Length: 411
Image 1 (tube, rainbow, N blue to C red):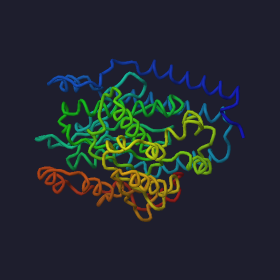
Image 2: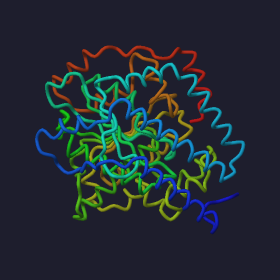
Image 3: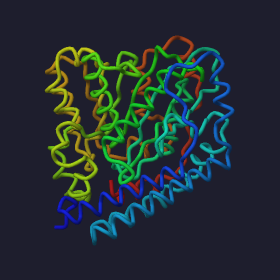
Image 4: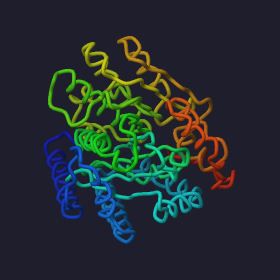
């Protein structure tokens, strides 16, 4: 099997990564907004700097082109055959079946006045975030910083639009944080980007009507892994007295949805599911870095001071998830509880990797994930009334399409 770790292959992969970074720098050069605290009234100026609709469409098209071109270049270089082509075909059919819902969510994303798109939080490519703002802003709102999934390769902040809409309808500000994907960057870049995005939220969300004392962190799939890495890394820095731009104590709770937290135990599983071992190890900075970027292992090796700083951790997982088995969340919860952290596992019986995050919300009506998240966020009476008065989400996709998409899903 061809790998990226022999001499010529490694050099070629490094060259591809450098080309992608240089392209990203040319496409995304823009003024940097520091994550440091801002003076009163600064938020209004930032809102005026938010991209226009045309700019956002251009940005999304640019990102789509870049990610697609890099993905196909990578596939062509690696010579991956039938398995990846089959997965790509399944993904295409899956997207077509759910397209009626995606189009409606896309319309909301681009045209709703409640969405502030592409706010710059750093100087690197993809250092942008979207804000989903509740209609009732009479009082500061709780905030959810959300890191989207995408197998570390195809993640994008707009993937969080459906969750952002659902939570915003119930009085929660949602900040969907974008980050560099492979081969634009490796896991160290992704964690750095996510941490910088969290820092921006912690230091600036009050300017958008958010309550800086009610900030929560959530990640889905690969995003759950990246967010957990950022949380553990920040806790270690803080316990060691290192300089920090945000504090773990600012995070009221962490929600990990369908994530994997011990990469050493998952690398073979991912390979069998189609994420080639050589690609995965390249994403994770080599096999020697797997332990460092495994929050479960990091928790085992952390000092009591580090563990004490961690917020309550809630891991959510479907029992029929074949992309990342629910046992990944179970073992992480077990380790966290053993070392003295507050951790709880919520299992969704019969749910797959995409059921909780996509199919269920597209179905409309009661959304178990949103209801569980809201029940765990301690909100005041005003927010509770907002939740109770929120309209029941309507169905966006026919049931037969949801069932067929569930059957054909590559995830």
